[in-house]
Length: 122
Image 1 (cartoon, rainbow, N blue to C red):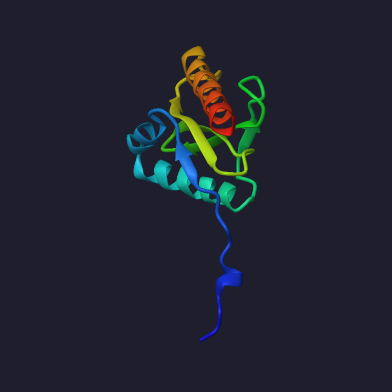
Image 2: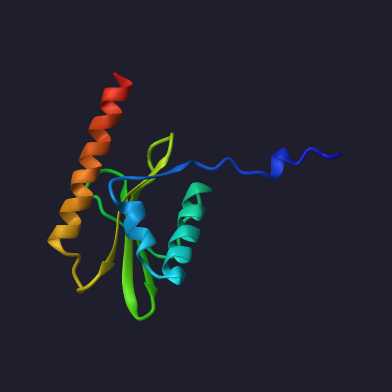
């Protein structure tokens, strides 16, 4: 039997921070599938279809942008760490500009993530 291991990409694990997994589960099936597929692309080291950097939240933070069901949805994540991809916040965007509340949640979770990594490394 041939060894197919060379065809299997090594995927970074995805870790959901705070309530981001539960927030994702509350969204419609199409949105969940789209976000999931886009995160799979990130796991493979590929670019997502629509994203933008959110460097104001922290180094390496990106916003995955999804439009579905006539609404806008976002997943804020960090992929710069070698051990995993961290999903910080998932939400439905209600206005043109991301709300202060959603930005604050993502920023706080990023800071917690960085602090937790420092403790583990030390």
